[in-house]
Image (tube, rainbow, N blue to C red; front, top):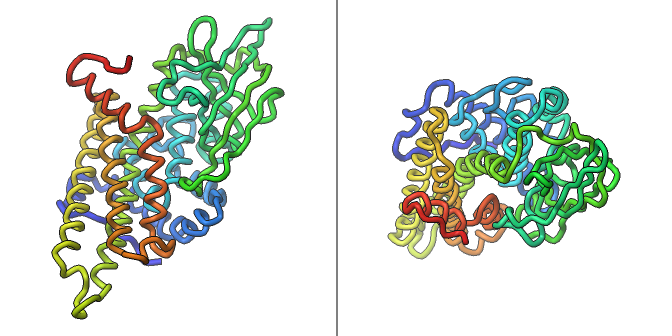
Length: 389
């Protein structure tokens, strides 16, 4: 496989440190050599490339921006560059890493007990254990505060009851972090695979994110000990803080998908000849589309870099991340659509990446907060008035 040349119209590489460029190159080489060759077949077969998990763990991709317990402790820009390269292969690969690190490892590190941290974080970091995050319910996606799942005390244990859906990694996870309503508010519990009353079922028939495991979780009289509760996580704010971490990674990741689509379209139009024997890249309408793509990708890169720098300084707000996720997911989806268009009939073939990315990005634009929800988060930030209710 040829090495991906990168997309850097505005010399943004000059804004990265040597260490940041080295991290990106490590991830880029892994993606070129190991992930890209599998992407098409995994999408065809609706199969997650689980054979890559141990190698991703050895490279430190899981929880890369977390400190301790075997994690690399990279800065947030370095973490973002890893997510960018993973999604360049397929959104399913980045989604796995996002859930593992941002939605399972981060809350355990931030809100968990020392026993929970020692038990789970080293194994999650290496990929020996797989985690999932259970917040969305069949009736409550954009409104997690309306969740119906409940927890009640019974002696020294907790009994969990409810259902979660659209859970990435759900049916392959060794541990599920599920959020339920208890007497003192919304709480997070670590539920291990095999716990009586806990079951998972994979969702089939997807036309998007086919190389990702998506599941429903069921909790029926599921008994867990007090030690399963994350002691520091109380209220919906704790769960939403995890989503902010994941949304940040998505904001970087989708740039990778857009870059892959752009480079495929650029290369195709330079080589494809039509009408007078000249490459179609010589036509004005084609160049206008390529110009739009490279401009929007460049703006997305700068947005991601600035939010990353703010995050490293402890100054990034959830509303900043909402702008990052909303903008970058939207322009990446449009890049995929344009790349498909520029390849004509060939654009629908899975020999080319655009249609696969386009299908995936339809989901990425929706999950971890829809485009509309993030617009309202930004709206509240600039007006001081919440429009959610």
